[in-house]
Image (cartoon, rainbow, N blue to C red; front, side):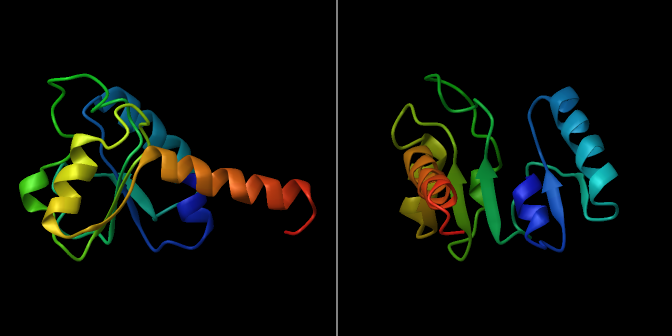
Length: 122
């Protein structure tokens, strides 16, 4: 969330099934990025990027982290969890036609940036 705002996202809505965790994240980000972050709902309709960075989806029977029936094929959906390799959220979004990224894909992208940084390429 911090990096997305750091890279000039106009607005970021944070949703978490755990309201206490959500409110803590929103409060800390709002101090650094006033007016650009707020608590959101599970409705993903109005967003370009939908990302799950909670543990929801790691256990069989977990609910979806957002209202998946409201996802749009034009959205990018990412999930940070690595087990299962393809989360139920990513599978649903992929089947809908969304561009997606798995937890392993996110990790690999971050690792590449870290290597470039350590080698002085960025």
